[in-house]
Length: 431
Image (tube, rainbow, N blue to C red; front, side):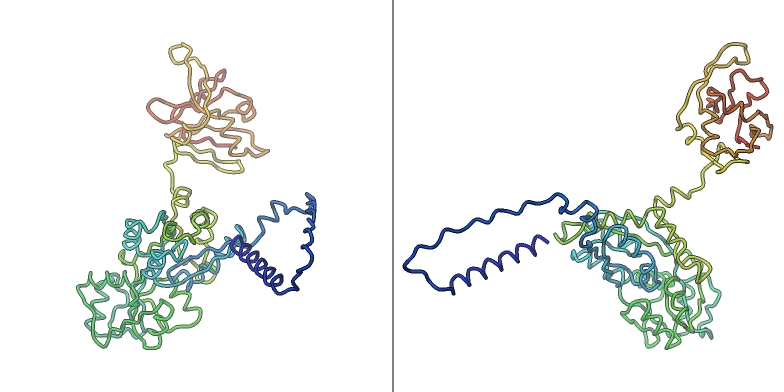
């Protein structure tokens, strides 16, 4: 906007100068004194509000991405949410991963979405990127004609399947574009001890969609990411999945912020905002849902660090279950990190001891006890239970789940009978 404004003012100044030069010349009278026009007062009501300012011209983010994210329809599904949320427009350059990385290296993109980890690591090591995050994964599949002239159907060894295709000299269409898929394909040929060449092997130099079209037309084999292949089945194709499930076919995707030193045109702040949005749990959930309606299962599996943290099973040490709004489960370190209090109770030797732990009523409040609940049952690791009136537990401010020195928890309830002071408690059941 500043550049546009400066250009406009300069043009107006030149125009005024031309008009003055072309006007009649006053030779007998001195020029009149210029009249100063007082500035118009600005009414505060006329000033744009913060909300109006935030809804100005959209920012533009340039995303260089592998073709699979566009061909599968994922970007069309995701990007409108980001664009609306931050008032931005995302310009997508869909190319092979190798080309996307080159575009980033040249400073012609703000952020990259790619799927060739070795190339991504080299890009980062060279200082072309400043941030890389795991995004998601799916897998590659070997597809081909239904009559399967090379006989690879059902094979789970991708390298052996490639070797069999080469031995049969069955038509194979290669991406041939240094993309992530092409990088994976070359690794599989190498693993099979094959250097493909001959009339049966065609290096297309095209994106995934175009290669699938060629393979379909020529009834040839090719390597495809699963998402793009499945998306193509909606349009119609004779190609079928023949080989899948080999660990070498694992296909992880990463997202990279390009080094802003590459170009003053790089929008580093917006790029990081986009990455934060992509790896957030809500967006990862959208990725987890994409494709379910059409295919019965998602086309990509979310894999960002925030998603893994939110979905990694914990080693449960204590639970609140039963008649509650939300059943809860915590690892021992999570319970020990909660706010604690101290409670005093007579120990087995008849002496007063001080115990540290988490108030039981706080755990119950977090779970949300149902209105018709009446009893709390403390369950130990060996299945022993001790029942207490719920209202009495909620009214007890110094009744705690105490921390044991050897690990685990005990119930400490001052003023209650010894029967409820159980050790090795693992569950609090609300009934």
